[in-house]
View 1 (cartoon, rainbow, N blue to C red):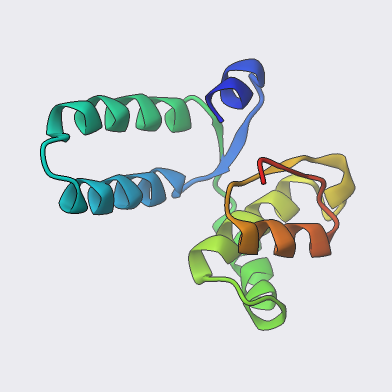
View 2 (cartoon, rainbow, N blue to C red):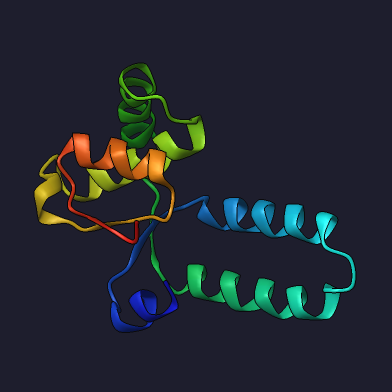
Length: 120
């Protein structure tokens, strides 16, 4: 993932992706004793990388698509927002944009929506 972000200066993320990253790292910190120093650096690095990406901020357009996505795919609301943001950016032409994820469920939904998926 680091390589993908480093090599792609035009990486695009949903505007609240930093919250998802923070949440995942906080869960890891709570379950991992003795890694505080390491995880602190990982948190800074991960959030810095997310913040260097272009953020999708079209909340109403993303919300409308996410509402449809949760009704047709077995994905969480957070995943639906990520996928909806990609649909907005691609102007409903998902084949024109690579969707990057390590989540198999989200990858399946993205493929069904027509995105080429990278990462899984």
